[in-house]
Image (tube, rainbow, N blue to C red; front, side):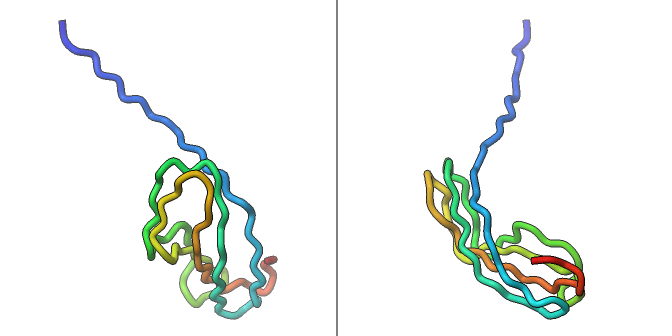
Length: 93
């Protein structure tokens, strides 16, 4: 009889607080933000890591969220991010 191998995929849930940033429409914006979290179990966010991006830099509709410093998410704490954005004339904050 052969071995049976099971691969178990699990989910790790992190809870992040909301952030608020004022952005000027139709202009390039660079906004530092601090994101608080709970339930960290050792995940590492690396300095310069892009967490989200959409659009083309410098063009209307662009948005990027990048990690400022390498941070290991353990328990509760905060992580420093930078939001780069170029909102369109109709985008809300």
